[in-house]
Length: 277
Image (cartoon, rainbow, N blue to C red; front, side, top):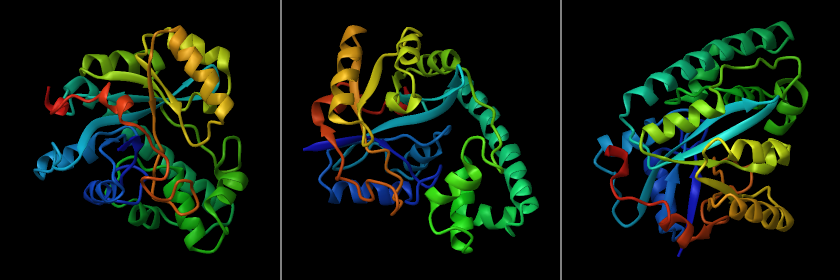
């Protein structure tokens, strides 16, 4: 059976609740999933507090995707098997969440100045339970109100890097994220290395103490997979992969089970009840 090690819920910028993710994953025949919300562990904590983690009929790996930056490039870092109650990690994630709120307010103000009649309340309604409020939530409101035909158009015209309504946000340093995830008992994986945009930088980052690399990813070509697999083997890293699923119709894949990895990659990460260790 297949697995998916990169999934977002509505506790960040995904559309489905953690319960809906688990149900959809079971229906798709997945044997392992990892919930990796942006800069928070609220989704997996919700499952635990509702008595749904550890999962029945499916193995759930507690994870996170942290946003960072290095040498002017966006860098995303995945953490697996983290203790979701590790206080040092939670404290630093709260700092990031506060930065996201400040950024969210600034972007809405910029859009209003540009003539787009949207409000913070409208974005918060779209964000729902998410504390990781960001550009995707704002983009959805702009599309819903008819200002743009699609989310990708929003990013291309107003919210992408260096576009009129873009505002940079507070991010942790890659080395600090590696240390935090390790301190929380986790495994640190460099997410979608192709999206970093500089393979030389990717190699420099791997030397910070990463345990693995997300080799299998929807935007990686067959040639990319070969190149990053060789890089991972060079540094004796675990290979991982996942769909980066958000349940967004305009983003591939729009269903769980379409992009998967073999169970053996998940089995190398899985530890029962890791979230509480």
